[in-house]
Image (tube, one colour):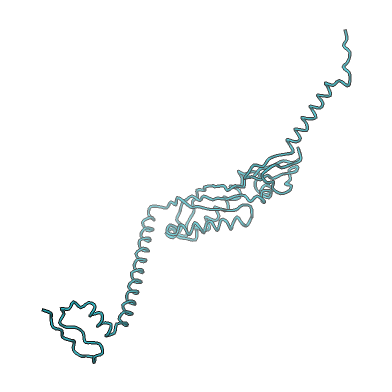
Length: 265
């Protein structure tokens, strides 16, 4: 027995069509909207080409299946770099340079277009070359003894040099740099210690000379201010009443003999 064909206006087929359309719309909406997390920006490309500025954290829109997104972390990154380089006197030093940096949000599109398509490539392609260049440039200007004794000042100089080098490209901000773990050959440590001791002794000697000069000035000023009346008053203030000879009275002729005072019984 043959079954009769289902009517064209069967409500079941219409419902299936509506569900299919709804799912397609949901898929399109899912492809059209995206969320950029806090601390990141997104680079949007249209058919592989960067378009527009960096998308900021929050809900954003893109054209489905035509545009793609590439997130970039713009929070401060901390990366330690162990290095070895030569000093001015051709001595090898080893240390660790810990650089703190952050990608500039407005430059994320240019970073993607010219250098790196993801966060992992930012350090090796942007930061590391400039950091190693600055380290080599600065340490090659100083002898080993100077580097060891002026470590803090040289660290600040390296930080400024790295920042200036990276500013040429405007990709990232350098927010700090720490140099730690300086390692030098044992035979040079004694020489460095001797230099530090000599500098301390020289500073101590200069301080003692300065104190002596101030004392000399003070005594000279005091001597010029002491006349016969002042001296006589000072004597009377300290006189115990027993001394037989006291200085000549103020106002007497110069060279007059001292006053004789009888000892008390």
